Length: 167
Image (cartoon, rainbow, N blue to C red; front, side, top):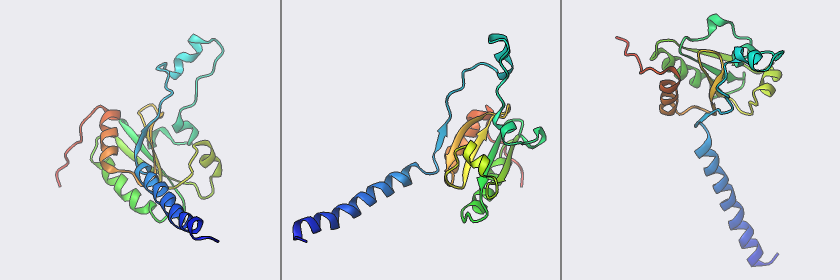
């Protein structure tokens, strides 16, 4: 192999890998607001389109009992048995939820639930969904969440500021 092509490959491949890694790092853990909400309550669908069945909420699709949901928001964490970052993420989310009135944390192990992983397009763990009080997903975080961004999302979703609990 000649020197010029070998040098181009030797420098080019690491440069491409570096760029891909930096883009990946910049995107992981960021809160992504979920669009697609029509602004029409699910129960009103049959009034607008007779015979239409109301769409199931994300909480129903996850088979979460109403008692497991928070009054303000619910943080749903998808984990697996072999996820090394999931236990730390769970501790951080439990602590974050305790800073708010009406916010709960629910952890779902996907190790034996490939159906849920497919349904919610979970390609890495941890992945976190923020559910509003009606059980609809309003935000998603792939990877370890950036807590400050998640706090901002909870402020928006709950419409409240953080509660200060005495220690």
